[in-house]
Length: 356
Image (cartoon, rainbow, N blue to C red):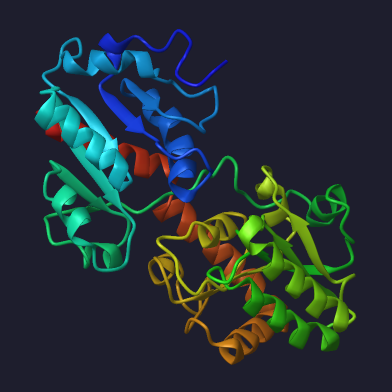
């Protein structure tokens, strides 16, 4: 069915609109996909835009004029933007077309905003920051609501050896992983170089790189594979590509490395810890607010190969400490970062704006 066509939702019942104006899968898109089903159980919410699964409640483009009318039993709808283009659309709908909307923006950026972004942010009715670091870059009042993790999807394996075997991996090997887009920004090269340094003296360990290299980064990926071939480690540093069932790959790991040079928030450490896997991570994004340094993993300076090799090697060589860190990581995530908690806090913001 073509985008924008189809029956759509009952707009009288829609209290919140979650626009997604980017077709390619991104962290923002993933957030919407995870949150909306939970929120839909408590509040009338619909998505708008391409690139989203059919199972989500969706407005169609032909239903946009319905936003000019109030929802049943309410004075306003909430328009929850997560990108500039979505903020702009909300401002046009409210300020130009006089739609009865309250505008919310979630920011994950950790840099000084450009003048145009500041202009849009100042026109929001509520602003949410995904971390304290992000909040420090905002020049308007905001509320920090950190991302949560789906604990039904990400959890430790019932049987670690079986989890590896199900993926075609060697159950006798211990695996360290690095998951995400394969590109310089994500530090995939730092991870590969660390593995080339560490694995020859640790025959019981192998490494997994999971993620997609887009067309512009295919050369980068090819160069990394050449380094691995030259080191004669192609059978132990595995490039497994992109997987929609990435949770299964986390359950095969005993250690995770998040080597990013830059990150907005970064969910991979939470996904790993929810799977019972300790994390070595660079101090970027929200990582310092997710990981308890020394307890659930180790924070290292960004773009520091020596620090990565040292920290990763220590965890690889310390099985009792890894087991304790696994238990500590599970406790931390389950108590502090459940996805249901994030969904509930957002609904509280929506209801406050509507006087509820």
